[in-house]
Length: 70
Length: 442
Image (cartoon, rainbow over all chains, first blue to last red; front, side, top):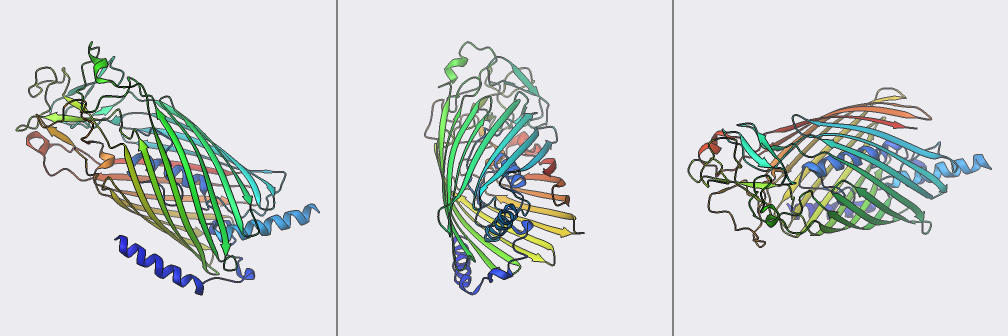
């Protein structure tokens, strides 16, 4: 599984040079709902729940700690 | 001049946003240097027969220059209810001592043993400062403090990002450090010591210090790429090193009769016959370090106003846990001001190498053994979880709101080595929860 992830990552990065837009082509990407984390408060609340209930955390950002979480 | 500033700010903000350089970045064409951009949310989380959490949160962000801003966030978290203590269920009621050692609680026959004593509130404050270092470089510094009755956490973080490739690619690197301390009621249990009856004169002999601590260091590397006029892609790798006290002082492991599978009576040393005496359980013990690796990718695409958003995370650690998480959202634009957003999340994890749902009598380590690790906490067992939800929102020029309802289901895998009565019991029954969340952006 780790190898597959690494291969996918390398292939995707090599494709980066072919991707991209000109500055005047960004009207859709500039919309707030297109931000990668368009609802940070919601993401933080979700992360807190899953941090408390599951054995994994982080990924999108820092995993961190911050609660006893029973 | 004011109008010019607004336009400059809007353009700069929009550019940063589409770069996806920072998690919190988003375009806000109404932003003004003088105004605070305030967002608030309220989450109600309710598990059937277990935990209920009410969590209001408010954040405020102020733009202090074209590419510079500060943000503050306040979270209040109120928890009530009951939490599984790790002991196995059986066909007889069972009695356990409260963590303080001064009282006891009795659980129902054939039901998961839930400790109903905890009631906690948490207050967390965080602040961040986003600043430009050059035309293409940016830095975000952050700090947070979180406090509960028995738990305190202090953390700092920094995230550097650089735009390259005509701002179509953003590279980021971050470092965070957190220091946590726990002072549980009743003190820190000695690993594998037996829970003693309430009020027992020797109760203190099962305790070590009154508090413990741990540190967490997280390192994050990310790359965000604009693919075309409608789509973005992100990859992150994160490394997390946790050192210190990682044991849950409230969790125990049952000791059961090797033939009948009935929990042992702590006093008589034979299988319990009624729920009036204490079941024999020993306190768990986890390693004092954990190293985690996460690979995360997210793809986002706009389809004529609708937004397709999918992410995947693979996590593995040196506790032999690995997990897969797939999260999918689709923002369906129903008018210029309204949307629906269905959400589906799948999560699957393997069990920790030291996951031990119960001990057969005589096989449990002796009290004080700190070289053996064991936990019966189902959250470190093999399980899958599913979240299904829907959100409805209104977006206006000066404010917006949304309401979301979600259902969360945890399904654990039963251990294969059950004996006797344990075969009639579900050691880790499904846990489900309903969540209601209201967001309001001022």
